[in-house]
Structures are given as structure tokens and as C-alpha cells.
Image (cartoon, rainbow, N blue to C red; front, side, top):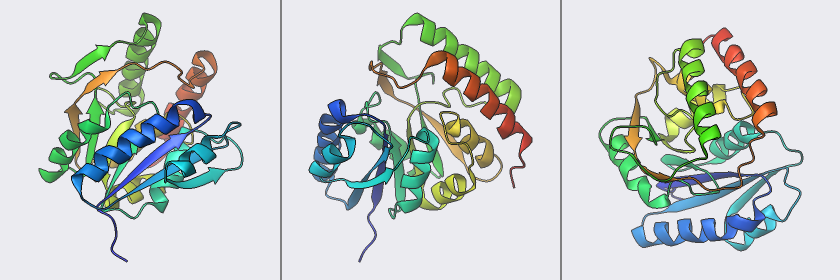
Length: 232
């Protein structure tokens, strides 16, 4: 069986309400391109009908029995993916699936990892986050640079395209199971894989699973763990 050109991995936790329209939009876009693809949804211990909605949309569904975190869900999906390129895509589609073409251009030009960016010079934000989240986000980005040395302007944007080799290497070596997995991926990629940051059009979508106080503490602990581990 021929491997697909593209795998799309969507981590999902209690996303039954908005997952159906998201998968329908992804499927319609990919079908119009004519290239082979696979769509993988990782249900990260949901308490609703996320898995059933994903199956009804025609996705391959992988299930965690208990909630482990976004990083763990992404890792499960990526390591199961067989496409030559692997797109990691949030269930809210705050970065539209149509922006994939910009990330593909970066890989065509030699990048191994293409990161969608809300903060690159040519990026456009259609709907901004509420100001408290913008302030916290800016503070966290500064902390990422100070603790890990990762200088990507938007490390947490949930739309990333990787070659299969880079994806399997970076997620296979990763250990962070929650939201800071993105930072670990970029930390491990330095001096090993070429990372390009790509300006995209982005819009805030409500319904985030982030619990600011709890997840901020966890993220700081994760940054310290990332900095302490070797990159080899």
C-alpha cells in the first residue's frame, strides 16, 4: 500500500461540539487537492463523544483511556502517521487549513519543520485574543527564550508541518506531555533540523482547554525540565 503524501494529526479533548465542522473543512480542502492523505484524531481521554464524532467524519481515531495532555496526544498521532509530511493541527482551526500551502512552500524550499506564526512580520490576526491572554502569552514567550534559548516568535501556535523523518525523531525523543511540548520540539530541533517560521492569518476561537493558573505552573516546570535535559 502506497504511503500517503500527507498525514493530518488533530489532538482532541472534549471537542465533540466543534470537531465535526473542523474535520469536514479539512476533508473538503484535502479532497480538492487530489493527493493522498490520512486524517488522524487522537482522543485524549475525552468525557464526551469526541471519538464518535471523529469516526463519523471518516478519521482514523486513536484513544487515550485517560487525559494525558496535548503533547502526549500529538506524540501518539505523529508516531502512528505514515505520510511523507505530517501536519499537526488544533481542533479549533484558529489557523485555517488553507494556510497549509504556505507551510508546504517552506518545506519545498528546504525546511524540515514549518511553524505557523501569528507574530511574523507579514502575519495577520483577524480576531485577537483577549488582552489578559495576550499579556500572558508575551510573558511566556520571553520566559521560553530566557530558559531554553528557543527564539521562535510563536512557539505555541498549533499549526505545524514537519517531514516524517523530523516529526518521528522530535516527537519520538520528546518527553513533555502537556502544552509545552511545542517548546521541547523546537529545543530538540536546534542544530539538527531546519525550522522556518511562516506568517499566517490567524483568528482567536473561544473554548480553550487551557486553565491559566494550573497550566502556567505546569508550563514553567516543563520549561525547566526541557532546559535540564540533553538535546542529543
